[in-house]
Image (cartoon, rainbow, N blue to C red; front, side, top):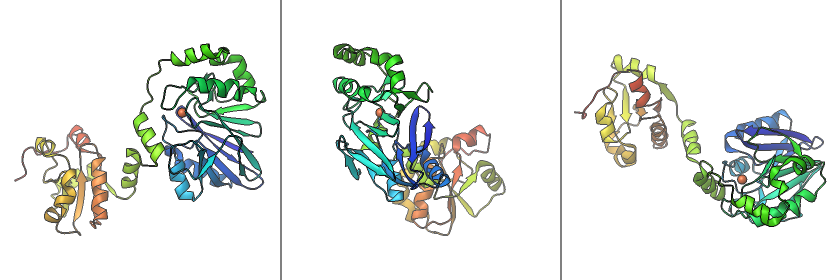
Length: 346
Ligand SMILES: [Fe+2]
């Protein structure tokens, strides 16, 4: 089996492939690594057939939906996944065939109701059911410590102890383990008694993952993250550097319209000399009145360079094909000591 673990902070995803047939699957892909999965698959001569999430992630942004639409291949999750975009729903005991590989699905609720583990040859992809030196938490939506106890002690831990364990998270950077090693060393598994195990899980008092609201929203709906929206806008517009704009302002470049898309009070406290005020929230409402010439060269700016990117992308969609965004924002402009004009535009 071809095997590539991909580490994103504490998150782990896996590209696995059949060397004989070049068929591959990605387990728990993460959105920021989208190009990496495609690059690795191309480098290894693999074609990805399935995008698999072991469960509904609350702590990372899944790339299954985006990659599946791009590659025209199915998103695979457990039958109980709430995500409407899942193309293939596996039941306990079913298999996914990837070339000559057989991915055996086991329903292992507890961390979430839709958690599953996948056994492939001598590897066990445990999602967040079993981590190295820990288990998945059970205090997030649909978590259940009783169910996790059953999934671990009545299912996973009864498998061949020589199986290698590959979880969806490894916060300690320990990389690889086996079931035997976890049975011997994992402190959470020392509580063989159901009541003690449940008690331990209920008293962990963990902080909520960052971005949990956005992760659940996007992973359960297939919607986009704010970062995705910004990245797509940034890919659709050219940028101009702060230094280039400063040079053009000093040279009194009359061809370039600087469009400040912040709110009025921010604009009035200091703006690029000659900049026009058109807040992002009014862009579509006032575009015809304020920007009658679609051939005009327009540069959008905002406080941090993010909203101005969205504004430039919107202008391009509206037909302003010379709209560009400032690479940076007014905060950086001020910090660079570049010229500012306070007050209301005459
Ligand atoms: Fe998780």
